[in-house]
Length: 462
Image (tube, rainbow, N blue to C red; front, side, top):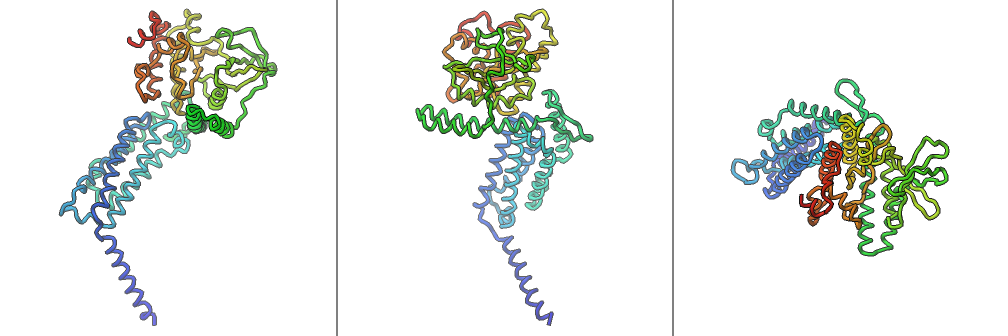
C-alpha cells in the first residue's frame, strides 16, 4: 500500500527537518565568535591602509571600505554578550558570519589589486572591475541580510553613490592612460578597451621583475656569505627562466667616429641599413657583467614604450663587452639645454617634462624604480623626445660610489630621507618624485641644481 510506504518517509522527513532546525538554532559558545568579530576589525584596518596608499580607484576603494566599516559597526555590540543579544550566538549565525568574513577578505584583496596599476591591469584587460565590484557587493548584502544586520548597514550605504564613485574612477583611469600616451578605444558609451600591447606588457614586465628581484636577492645573500656555489646556482636559475637571447652579432655593426662620455659610448650603424643608429656602451672589467645581463633581460621588454630608451642587448668583440641601446641624437638633457638654449621655449620645456613623467609613470605601473633620476639620466632623441636611461635596477645600486664627482651629482637630486641614511630605509617611488621635482626646476631654469655648491655636506644641509 502506498500510504503504508509513504508514512515512515514523511515521519523521517519531519524528524530530519526538526533536527536541522534544532542544529541551526543550537547555541554556539561566544568564544568561537570572537575571532571572527576581531578578524572583521583587522581587515577593516588593512583596507584603511590600502585606501590611504591607493593610486587609482580611490573612490571605489572608499566605497568598499564604507561597507566593511558598516559591517564592523554591526558586529561591534556583539563583543560583549548580554541578555538582549544572546539569541544571536547560534550555529546558523556562526556559519553566516564565517561567510561574511570570507567576503570581506575578498573585498580587501580586490581593493588592493585595483588600487595600484601593476595589479589593476589584469582587471582592465578583462574589463572586470565593475563586474567584480557588483558581485562582491551582492555577496556582502546576502550575508548581511541573513545575519539580520540590514537596517544597521543600509544606513551607511547608498548604491547610487557607489555607482557614481565607480563611474568616476573608471573615467579617471581612462584619462590617466590617455595622458600617459596609451591607446584607448571607446566601445559603446561607457566601456573602454586598451588597444595594442600595453596591458600585456605591464603584466609581463611586472611578473618578470618580481621573479628577477627575488633571485637577485638570493644572489646578494650568497655573495655576503661568500657562498660562490649557491651564487652560481642562482645565476643559472636566472638564465634558465629568462631564456630569451639578447646577444647581438658584433660584425653586423659599423663603428663611427662619434663618441660621448670620454669615449665610453660610441655610435654604431647597422651595416645593412645605415639609417639605423645604435649606442655601444663599453662595459668595464670592474662592472658586474652578470648583473648587467640580468638587467638587460628586463630592459628589453621596455622597447614598446616611447619614453624609455630602447635596449637591444649585449655585443662582444674579442675581450670587450658592450651594452647596445638606442642612439640619442642630442645626448643627455643637460648637454641638450646647454647646447640649444636659444631654441628651448616654454612649450618644449613642458613637453620634455611630460615625456619624463610618462616614463616614470610607466615604471611605477610595472613596479620598478629608476634609482638615478637626474638630467644625465635623461636622453634626448630625434624630434626632441625625452627618454629615461641609465637605470639602476638593483635595489642595492642606490648607495654611494667611489667616484666623488659622481656622488655630488647624485646628491643634488636626492630626497632628504635618502641622504639621512636611516637604518632600514627603503628607496621607493616617493624618492623618485622628489628627484623629479628637482629635475623640473632644472628644466625650468636650465641650470644645474645647487650649482654654487660643490661639497656633499653643504648640499645635504641645505
